[in-house]
Length: 222
Image 1 (cartoon, rainbow, N blue to C red):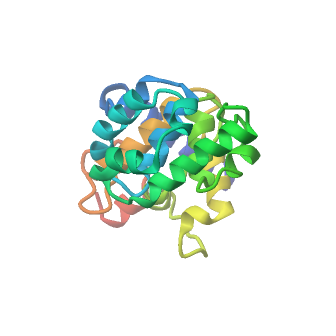
Image 2: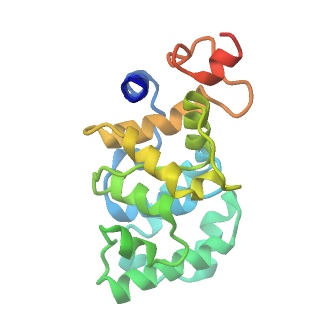
């Protein structure tokens, strides 16, 4: 009985996120493509950075180096010039190193499996799964601080890890709630839902479609 109630709640949450995507998805340039190289670059630029800032840099980056082979020939100082607007200059060396790995180890093709993606220096679970989902349309979850916030609030989840997005159990839950289809749309919508509705500060609980099933909203007596 409890299990059925939990499954029903997960299904309702799926529907909330998929309905949200219809009118609320932010139109970032990397969401207009499924090219693995473009997706990988966007995710590397998005690390610890506001997505709105990344949009302009991403477009300039792809225009200057439209393929992995061209990026492979780039100078680190030229990469730094392009990404200076979003800061974190260490990423220039990381991006260059990843390009070299892909050319030398993977014949110039962005890997399409988790093990090989994780072998790229600086690529963790989030970026690996983002590439698998958004570039290769594979049914895999994505979990970052924002996604965890949504799930932890709605389902009163807890993690023993100080950084919950490193907890295998959190990833297992995120996979269990993924719809069987429309995973790309679901994951993009989930990111925007966390950013626009279930915000870290001043969440929009009153108008949130999940407030009838969300334990956080119930605690606030919404």
